[in-house]
Image (cartoon, rainbow, N blue to C red; front, side):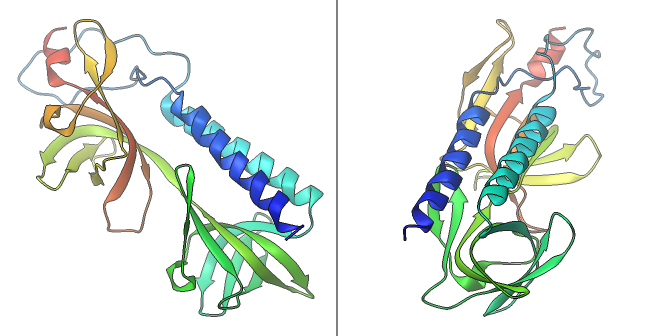
Length: 246
């Protein structure tokens, strides 16, 4: 326990700092948006964007996490970080940053597994760890293997944007992305929702009922499993009225 407390505290502070910094990102970032052609005239101008896109800032934050985790690993030889290649009941194959596969040994009732969800840590069962999950593992090396005492699963966030094509009563937004692919995202009670005020060109908090088909959307979501809806952490809505007023 003397070993685990500082590890747990360091990783928790890292993740909380990440979310705190992420929450301060300004939402009016849409210089790169190009509205889907409609019968209304194409806009002649768009709101002024702050330097750098939201996507670039998310990438920068991910790089900072990578750097910090590398520093932790350098100072404490009992931490490894990687992506699960294969998950079994009593062990994981984890691909580390050097592309080497490390076998992580799990022990039911002893290995503690937790999932970072925003600023909280939720307990996980071993069977909930799946391929492509990103994990930080604290434990002890055993020759070529690694005995896990605590495993932290880190959420994978991505940026999506496009035009809304459907809204369901189950709080699901379907959009056509800028890459012409369809994406469905779940809006939850914890999702931060902002709507552009077309007159003042500022974002204001909004609710699901104010969102309409045809509006543009930018969202930061949890990537999730292939074929399933992505959970929205933060969305910014640009109403179609904005483009009509240009």
